[in-house]
Structures are given as C-alpha cells and as structure tokens.
Image (cartoon, rainbow, N blue to C red):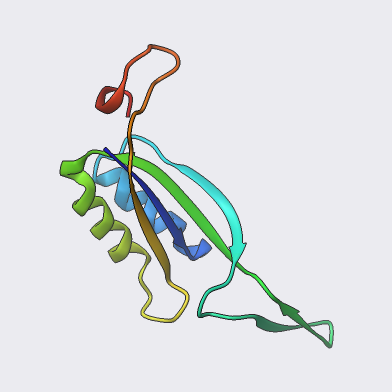
Length: 112
C-alpha cells in the first residue's frame, strides 16, 4: 500500500476528483493549503493597491492506494491537473505500513 499526497491548483480539484472517481478510487482527503516552490509570490491589484501574496493557494489531496493501482492513480492525477505552466503542483508517494478502518477493524487493503 502507498500513501499519495498531491498538491494541485485549486481550480483543478474538480477535474482530479471526477477522474479519480471514474477510476474507482474509494476516498480521499482534501485540504486547502498555501505554499511556494519555483512559482514565487504573486502581485495582485485590489482597489488600486498592489498586494503581494508570499504563499500561493493550492489544494492538497491525500489518499491510500494499492500497489497495483498506484501508477494508474498517479497518471490520472497528472493528466487531470496538468496545465503546462509553472505551479501545476507535485505528487509525493510514501510506503504505507498499515491502514485500519476504525468502525469495522478491517486492515490494510480491506480498510481502504
């Protein structure tokens, strides 16, 4: 099993969600986050004043996937979130030791 964390543009969340749903992904956690990478601060004009945001808003998607589904899920996230511009995001994959469903006590693949 693997724990997958994807950081994507907020307006791409719907596309990623629909794609993963059609791929049969059973669940995910989504968090609104801010950060920066190579895509640095953004200057916006609001009511005639310039404001610089040091952190860029993003969405963090987290989900557990089986080893056999990992490559397909990663490809789906890339294809549905990619714009070709800097700031499209990142995907991190971690080895997941164990998963446990609290309600039923199911473990590992049965829990996800």
